[in-house]
Amino acid sequence: MVDWDVYLVTQASLSAGRTTDEIVADAIDGGVGVVQLREKDRTARERYELGLELRERTREAGVTFVVNDRIDLAQALDADGVHLGDDDLPVPVARELLGDDALIGRSVSTVEDAQEAASAGADYLGVGAVFATGSKDDIDDEEYAIGTDRVAAIAEAVDVPFVGIGGITAENAPEVVDAGADGVAVITEITRADDPAAATEALHSAVEQGR
Ligand SMILES: Cc1ncc(COP(=O)(O)OP(=O)(O)O)c(N)n1
Ligand SMILES: Cc1nc(C(=O)O)sc1CCOP(=O)(O)O
Ligand SMILES: [Mg+2]
Image (cartoon, rainbow, N blue to C red):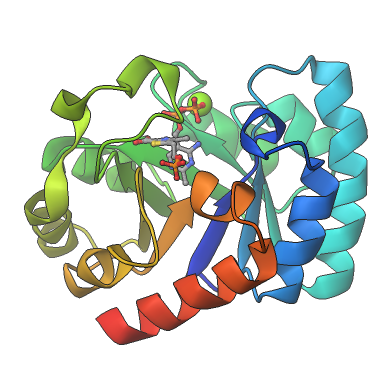
């Protein structure tokens, strides 16, 4: 069983000088359910080395560990799964390579894409950007925000679990969950927080409030 409530996507370049390992340790203390190794600006070797630390930490804590984009890295790190977007290998290919037990996530922003990803065998969806975000270069504009009405439409259309992502804070998280998301995925609400453990706890309370 995966705890979707609070899903941390790592990015050291958005972590106010702290290492991703420190941020993840704090987020685990705050009760994070899923950690995704992202680190878009790092080489595969750098991600692998960081991933070894994160795999150990998450395994000890019983936290789900997912690798962004790369199936090979997910395999090399014995991750619980992989998160795929439009530029990554298709879900059925990932399933073939990783097997039935792997958790395969897919990014979507429309009802049609959500239905297609679910039919292709995705175990969960990352739905966004719910609100405007400056954390992802190719969507750092207001026009990419889908809003909570779209979240509600996706919740109506698919049965797979999903997390909202993009511009989510403890303040707006209740709306996202109230619209039907199973949890919230964040970068900066945790990585930029003065106290990442407290920020994770605050997101938990916000998710509970939205249910
Ligand atoms: C949980 C979650 N949802 C969405 C994304 C975005 O994935 P993608 O569109 O492939 O973009 P990158 O993160 O790879 O830049 C995600 N990473 N996690
Ligand atoms: C990695 C990512 N994917 C998104 C999507 O919409 O698919 S938005 C996003 C960035 C999320 O960062 P923050 O919590 O700081 O807004
Ligand atoms: Mg991707």
